[in-house]
Image (cartoon, rainbow, N blue to C red):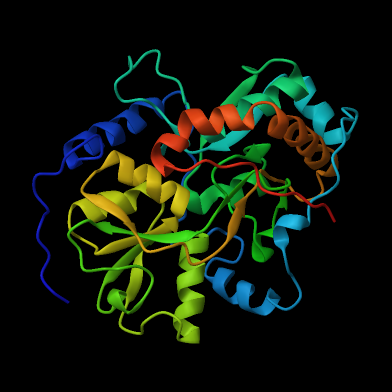
Length: 335
């Protein structure tokens, strides 16, 4: 592999210097926003590297995972919801480093800066409907590879964190109906000779987040011969944003992640761009504990109303400036 050199003259909000400030902010806010700890081996604690194998073995028995959620209900009397109402706060696992999805504006005052973004808007809407107060919420920053364990361990009631609904995860957590459609895409420097998810990835080092659908897709495609054999996919990180930092530092050649997230990262750093078209179709859902049927149905009812009043305003505010396209909520079916 060729020798690495630090990329110079990074511009924009996403430059290394500014990114260091954001990471420092993360450490500061950890005092008030609890961070869950990732496991030393990077596994989710629920199968670890079995994600790719799970995708393969379940491929024939699970189709259209985004259509497997329960029908909506406005009932507030279920056991899970009653516990949340007695507590008076909704515990939500989120990201605090994904620009336009769940992040803190580095230009705002440190003491007053609040989480904001598309996922954060949805979390507030859910709290408002269940507890009657949009602010009756406790956000807990969860690394990518700790989303499922955080739900299973009861650290959070739900995760609203650009989390793709797939067959393997349906064995571990329950999902709401989909609230956003996206697909895996390649992010690389503008000056790179990478063209997309194709032969131009030969001999390139690719970064993904542990426990992500991006990593699972790459592992499956490499075994199936759909990804060029010489592509190096060994570089993984606990949080997806860490891949952007490694890309900026010249430590990897490309990042593979959801196209919607990649667009936000490209907006942070104008020296990188999306390469090619998405090579998968995926849907984000709100993840909750298996068996919490009352909460799943209630969240689905919130989403029914949110798609009519709230979704479009949030999309236009947060995501349209980076994705550069109009969008509508994804179609919904229930099992």
